[in-house]
Image (cartoon, rainbow, N blue to C red):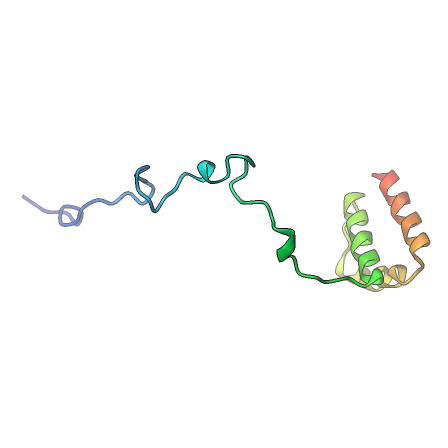
Length: 102
């Protein structure tokens, strides 16, 4: 009788989980009131960080362009930086125009 490599070792199914095993708690039972697998974020643990208004306008402009179907390319960075330097009212108008084109 020939032996195979599997006869010498017990087969272990890495995906088999014993539901009574305390190492694998039921995720739904941990947060039944939320309906999510993760606990909601704690506002007291948030990092206090403010972003520069120009950087906020730059990020918003990137998002508006991408939403409008015009994803910015790396060579567009200078133009986006210049547009972000404009006053907030002009930037808002640009974003509104882009929003209506989508």
